[in-house]
Length: 496
Image (cartoon, rainbow, N blue to C red):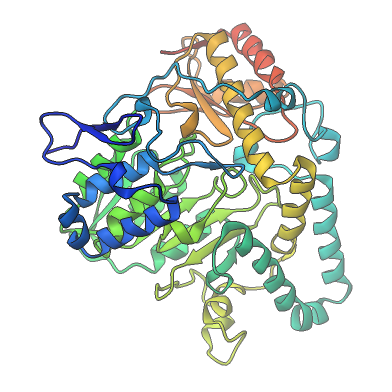
């Protein structure tokens, strides 16, 4: 039976009469999240050997961890084991009206940009509320990329033959340290979409096999799944993400979707249309316990969340650096778990064993043909420049998250819209349900806003249109007030 539990203030699980068992967090004691995660992996990996003795099922433990594992922003824990709010636990619906109070020390940083827009390569005449789609670069990053291109063009052969690989390895090491992944298992790719293509190209599927994903999977990745399934005779099970968002209910639904035919799973780390941070460690754990490979599309995660790729444990994890870490476009990456395949979608010189570095992952994926490497080589400058602009990455995570919540709160209040998730489920983006005037399509509204100097996406979501706002260092809270006034003038209202 489905576990229905919530934690009281002492950390003990309170279970409804229709439950068969419960998780007592007191039994884990005052332990760190890392130790807790290790115990989770042990319990699941041995198929209940340890969990059974404790009276805990795999799914129960995963669901409990997803709702109680701390969410890291600025090195602080939003939740503590045994001290979670009941409204965020797995069986309770979230309260859409809930808004986290902004700490006083953050309030002043929301009313004005932390980094003036003049320090960015962005047009100050435009209101930029869509960093999530295409990013934006500090001028220092643009200058660094131009410097790499100039160095390449000054002596193309010398650079490509003698210098490029060493410089790429230095950039790789910096990025690997930032996302907490082993550098030897990280390869640069043009984008997350390309990384997903490599992962899917590496999967063995047969007729009748099933792929599990969610109904909010990024369109480009869903298209890849559909093409793969059609070519192999496989099926796709898309689990609906519950709205208002309930992470425990999502884990339950995904667990129910796993069958003996399941051979692959693909999940967004942060959903694109709704900007929700999924309980990715728990979702990956469901499949890892069964030996099923998992692709995680983390396009939005680097620079928006304090990312630990190794702890997530996905078979393939992909991400972008042009979004929240603010490198130039064309700077994606792929992390491949040890022992997992990574077949490039472009076969090039690295397929020859005598060519390239000894690391065969790097040999095959680093070079797919002559290209401009400045985007990848500029990643260390981007990481350092943005950190300098925002007072360090921990402060950036905290401030941008608080601003995203403030932007959403002001928009929702001004338009009369509901909140589809608690603030704790957000990173540095937020989506607000809206109602368009009769006969107006989402893309038409978006185009009109673009022509008037507003960069903000209008999402054509199956359950009703959304407007998604992003918060970075050049944004401030009053932009939500201006946006709300603009939307009202166009006949747009909130939706509940």
